[in-house]
Image (cartoon, rainbow, N blue to C red; front, side):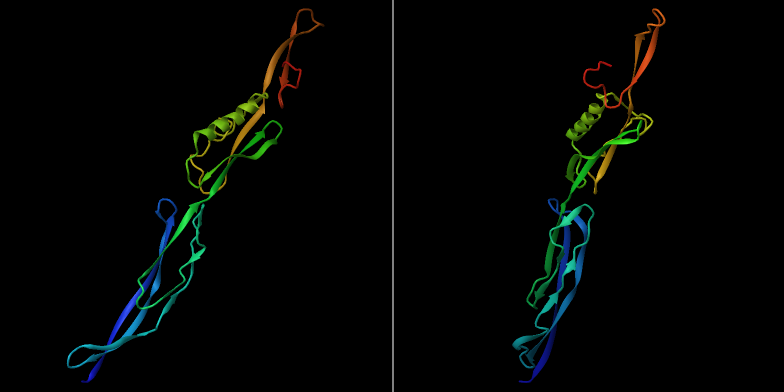
Length: 220
C-alpha cells in the first residue's frame, strides 16, 4: 500500500508564578515563557488509514531558560532566578512557583534636646517586624517608657513640634523599609521661692533649668 505523510504539532508552555509565602497571593505578575513547538511526522496507509511506525519529532527536545525573579519591595524570593527546564514532546506544561518571604523591617527612635540642639539618642532600636505587619501594642508601651524616662529626668516635651505633641506618632505597620520616630524635648523649669537675707522677709524667685535632671543630692 502507498503511504502518506501525516504531520502533527504539539506545544509545551511554561508559567512561573510569583507568590507571597504563607498566603499564596500574587506578589508579581506571572511570567509566561514562549511555548516550544514540536512538529511530528508519521506515515499513514492510504488504503487502511492506519498509522505506520513511530512519530518522528523535530526538535527532539527543547529548553526553557532562567528568568530573574522580579523585585518586590520588602520581600525576598526563595529563588533569585527560575525557569530552566528541558522538555520533550511528551512533557506537560511546566509550572514553577517562586515564593516571597517578608523581610524584617526595623523601627527606631531618636530623642532630640531642642534647647541645646543635641541628639540624646539616635536611631535606637524600638522593634523589628515583618514587612507590612501591624505594630503590636507592646511597642507603643515601650515608646511610652522611652518618653517617660526622659521626662523623669526633668525634660518636657517640645509641643511646638510634631503637631503639638512633641513626639511622632508610631506608624500603623512596619511598612516596607526602615522607619524612625522622634521625640522632641526642652529643658523643664521649676520656680522655687528663697529668702533674700538682704531684704528682710522678702523672697526672690530662682528658676532652675534642668538638663539631665537634678544631680545626686539635689532636691530641686
